[in-house]
Amino acid sequence: MHAFRCLLLLIGTLLMVISCETHDLPVVATVDFGSRIRDWDGFGVNYVEVRHTRDYYEWPQDYGGFSYLSDTKKREIIELVFGADGLQPDLAKMFQCAYHEQTQDNDDPYDLNMAGFDHESYTRNMRWFIREGLSKTRSLGGDLTILAGLYAGPGWAIKQGDWGRDLNPAMKEELAEYMISWAKYLRETEQFPVQYISLHNEEERSYFYRDDGYAVWHDDHSLDQRRDRALWWPKEQIVDFLTFMPHMIRHHGLTDVGLTNGETQWWTYLMHEETIGSIATAIVSSPEALEGLGLITSHGFRKKGDTDLSPEGIDLIRGKRPELHAWTTSCNWGMDNTSNVNFILGFERQIYLAGVNGIIPWATLFCRAESDRTTWGKSFRSGNTNTPFHVYPDGTYEIRKSYYYYKQLTRAGRGGMSVAKVATDDEDLQLIAWSRNDMAGVDSGHPDAFILVNKADTLRQLAVQVDGATSDRFKAWVTTESGSVGEMNFAKDNAQYRVNGGKMVYNAPAKSVTTFIGIQ
Image 1 (cartoon, rainbow, N blue to C red):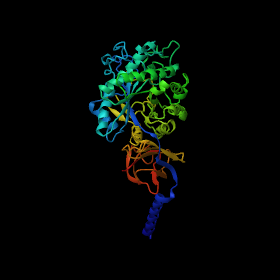
Image 2: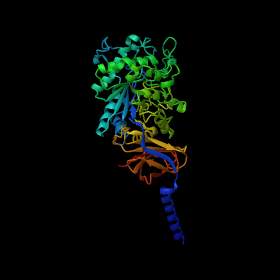
Image 3: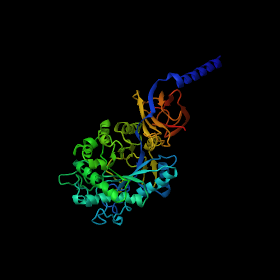
Image 4: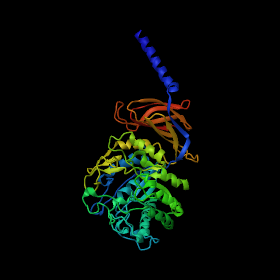
């Protein structure tokens, strides 16, 4: 009798599961791969080496920390980032040294003598990271698109010298030449696929400077007060460079390299910068500057929630130049090593609210050396220091939780795809999706993919409506916070999830991020 009851119970359970898989669960989320919103260029990485040292030989800064690691350890990280089971980024960002000595090549910015610029001494580790990563990426059939940018202005181009505010008008074309020489060096000497040059890094705000034009901390040389603000970029200066610099770029043979508007701290500053007014309005008001713009860029840090991700600036510029792409070129990694699913939700807002085509977060590696080589003047709990890798002076490194969360994104949203439409009526669920076809219907070669975030503290059994997919089966990878289901880091689910009658049923673990990738 007991065995009979157990058999009935088992049969009932199986019938309930079959029923749930096919009929009973309400659809609470929708992914429509056929509704493509915009082209997607991919996710990226950024190795930061020299950020704010005033004298590289006195203080040879290496923020990323490769100078502490053995060749074996460095290659382990290259594999984790660019390898077959790594992040597999499509984009990369390479900062130019801000404190280059005044070794001008000559007095003619249209006569470029590359021997007059030292682009090697200050960038060895960054170039090694990109060189090895590019080789690994290409061995897997991929490629990188690289943004070369000026971190801050060199003292020789600034009226006040180092850490000053005002561009010397007589040096503006020399400064443009300096930026061009960096991109040209990377393209021709390193053979890196540089496609864009960025004007500045968060240098749009005048209140970082005193009335005399020096940075507010100019006279304080204590190590934890070193900052990286130098050379203010008002909207008139941005418009001016967008007007004359593209001609210089072409003159020096970089015919397919585009110029960006520089990188404001928040997307809202592109439209509503509190000290200089609207950069976007100034650009669209100048036909020459609008024509000279090759990529719309900003950082995507958030202090006021969605307010800081305002799409107004992008929308205004795209109203005149709808073909232009926009990249978030820096954003944080969550606040500490317990970084949770909200980390992914920040990226969701960048994509669906700000309306970007690509995202490169802040530095991929951070060296945890409490010395004047790497001290940044911010707490190690800062969102900028919760990078995927922490490097230590003893020659070891640590993989952080942010690595696994970021991998959920990078392996799904590959360059050449398009952002797809999603919807949910459940406040605990959030989605991001990419179609394998771009806006013109061209096949990217990457399968349809989507991400499901369960913010709830409990497991959720749910049905997802899946429309327009090129596959009816998906594989899943999961990252969770620590909890009753255990801690999983980009763990491969051995199950195959089939779309049956347009629905796919899934049990989403508590506080989890699941990436579904179509099976071809």
